[in-house]
Amino acid sequence: MAALSRMSSTPPQSLILVANARMPSERAQSLQVAQVSAAFARRGVSTKLLYARRFPTPALPEGQDLFGYYNVPEGARPDAIALPNIDFIDRVPTRAQFVPARIQELSFANNAARWISKHAPNAWVISRELETARKLVRSPTTGVFLELHRVPSGRTRRRWLIEAARGAKGVIAISGGVREDLVELGVDPASILVEHDAVEAGRFADLPSRAEAREALGLSPNKPLVVYTGGLMTWKGVDHLIEAARSLPELEFVIAGGMKSDVERIRSLAAGLGNVRLEGFQPPQRIALYLAAGDLGVVPNRSKPLISSRYTSPLKVFESMAAGLPLVASDLPSLREILVDERHARFVEPDCGSALAAGIQSLMSDGELREKMAAAGRSRSSEITWDARAERILTWMAARA
Image 1 (tube, rainbow, N blue to C red):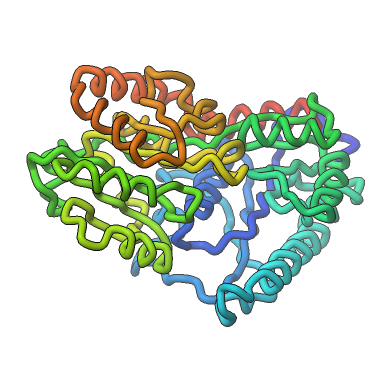
Image 2 (tube, rainbow, N blue to C red):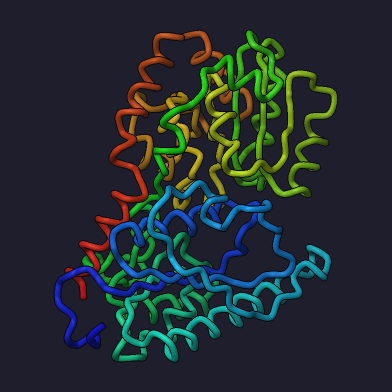
């Protein structure tokens, strides 16, 4: 590909995505990275994904490749390259992991920048790691774009962020909240594109019936079912969901997802509740079954920290819309951006188990409204796909370059 100074306003021939992700892993980040990189490859762009060789990394199921595991459709695939890094995070107690985590992040970021400078100095780059972008923007032959999922709070990393953002060709913000905070830091608003996460609609095109899904999961065929899929970090608000379940014994609650330590924490909170079933982490291909089985889903995020209230773009929201699962969601700017209004969700006060319970009970009792929400979500599926997102980003990148 020609050097940056000679680039035209056409999509890149070669694109590199940089993500400090464990592949595969139990975190939604890894699914996002796999789907994003594959969507660019399907647009006819030669794509490489640079990710971290973490220790330990779960083994893929026998006979399955990385992208098949994440339900990426058949077709073009990116080259996935695992880069070395200094990783001893899981060898120390949780309370002592801050310094090892920073070492791991910085070592991966430096190795990614070196790899690109050596092997692909003329490729366009989308980096989720601001440290990698900060190093690459000093090179005149690399078209660097920064993708941000949160704005760091520390003084040093904010300084690095401003340096990287001002040197990059543009910044992809995962939410309007990220964009607003970047502008407040002095980043040029014209250089920022807001692109939320998305969904692979094909995963939800031929779902089993509710009865079939419940049978496959061993769930009651008739009891009203509330479904939560995703991580169980404290800011996700699942503790308030347990509080709501305690006051709604006539409903069944299924929670699928989470790291082992988080699952155990929620299990302790739910002790004695016969209407709560904790499934733990589930492979991506099984999530569709849970969404198909439910009468409604929940997104009970807390109002703090900022990752929850302003920055997050939850995959579960897009997947639920594609699956036609109506939602009860915390009334937060991050979720309002995606769900927009009451056609797509019943919004409730965050940080309040009783408000969440009231919202669940109200929506569960209104079958007609649930059907309307399901139809509204499905109708948006063509707009919120990874392919549509990739096309918009490539067009914007070409114009910025």
